[in-house]
Image 1 (cartoon, rainbow, N blue to C red):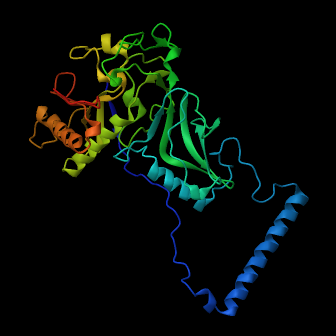
Image 2: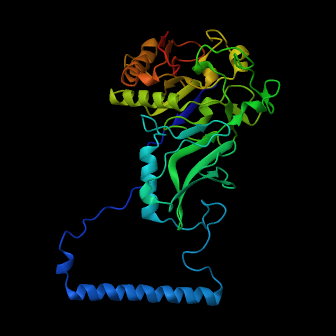
Image 3: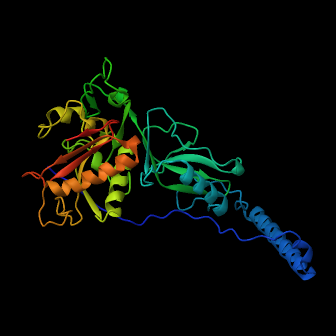
Length: 380
């Protein structure tokens, strides 16, 4: 079986706002010197004169008037209008702080949106009034959708726009699902998916086992899209059908949050994680039933619902679990280090409770752990 590996780039930057300088205290204005006031008036007059000259020039040359040029159809293009830094930074900070899209870990970088639904973003601050709006721009940059609309199926960046410019919200991508109703005879297009239990009737055992309403489309161009700090969209692609594109996956932001929190816990407790390896992320119902080695797979595997991952720590990039406990051997005890970190995460964040499974090294792999967020405790 092929494993996917990822070298982690730990550099993450967020825009920062303008420093708030102390203003004049009560009564200070009355003590200003007349020369200061005269200088301020001169600056204002100079600014006004420059504006008049610019407007006259634009009229005589036919060039766009200052501040009135429209933004191009692709707001992220090189000739787009410049950003209005302070207003947009305020909105950007509000969105990053308030939306919660990053999860408890702060490392989740996607919002998964069901077909026909608008992304669940928080309202912008009232102090900004109508000066800043939200838009979605397709990953290809050729389509823009208003923020109060449901973006069509695809990959979308989130933009904040003011009258003077535009900013992209960092580390956030909207994954708008393709409706499952597009599936015909177990396939979406040429891609074989299969069918979920209770898809055509009956009552699932719980909401967590309800068939999905849609799937995320994956293309060769978006395989390496970051979905969290340590994971990429490719890590959720089912094995097989190598030459069939596009592919389709399910992906759970809650699972990503639990994985990132587990990695944080490993780092905090003295087990550094620089690189991860993935055995299996999402599995289509068809593959879960008959693809690869099916021994040990449950008919209701959480992999079919996009909230399970089989993974390991692979800092040295050799495709095998590392010697995490430092005893000079690669065995079950190394995987147990991950299980113990996952146990501590579930104790701190019971809303992420789920399955933790330990798999010993075999001829096919050097051991891994299973992590999921099924909603109740399961261990093996």
